[in-house]
Length: 390
Image (cartoon, rainbow, N blue to C red; front, side, top):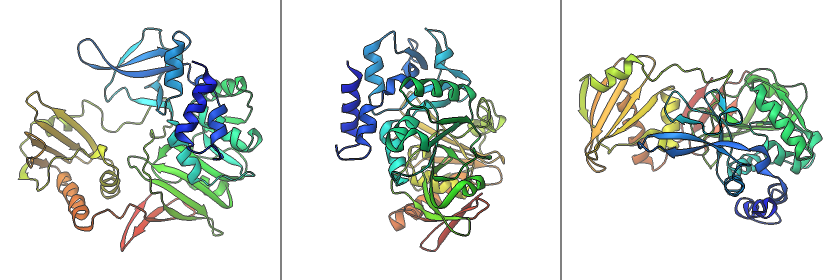
């Protein structure tokens, strides 16, 4: 398969219209250059979920097919980048080995860039990852107007080399997004990693009237906000939800709830307070509006699930404060039996959000107004409801 024809097909499916300003960047950027190796989700011979390393140059057809599909290609699991793994490497897919870098699906990249309302003279700061999104930004406004950052020195090194291979030489630097940004004044700051709140350093680095676009960690919320003369920003929650990997500060995520947490044993076996939920089972990470609202009300819930061989399902909610909940139902229609313990009743909090949704028809996070202080405290508000982050 010729990469140029594959890239044009990708542009047809993501940029939609040939007259779109993003059509030619997608159609002319060699995505495969930025992802020579990646981790694919597979099932092992003993039916266990695993990550399998894929080698693009060794299987050019699979390389072209994967690179020019509108899909995310995971490049790093835990601390192991696919570039550094053995040719036949296999890793278990579990809670302790999670994806830590990827080449984001192109349509999601374009959504973030469109929300940024990038203009021809815009000076951009974008997140790096594989470098593909940086290449698209360079193709749109010119390499001299693009700064790309990542906390991972290897990702910066490899992206810089692969950008050069594609004939592009933007500024690419190692940087923790939550700290000071590279010197400069930016018209747009666009993050394709999720952060717990908007860093104050972003507001200091934005030009007057500049725009930031980011997602909030553990939610589906895309925040779009323009800098105000007072040094803060105002905007909205974008209509389209998105989920990105959480930003990290080092080699891997800073976990507070490991797999073998004693609370996990409590949640599996203790009786606690027993009730029957008024609603069928819901696995919160599969939603965006319920998940986002619950995260604003009770930040930091860890969600887990188990499917029994008889078709039953059990969902768990754990929190670092010692709260836990377990809900079990034999099928999709039956209301679950709920066991809860600890200082807070987590399933009751979930049912409160679902009642809100049932009565109003939506949740106020959808389309909420956003106000960000110069210190980075983010307030969401809509119809008398409000919540603060940071």
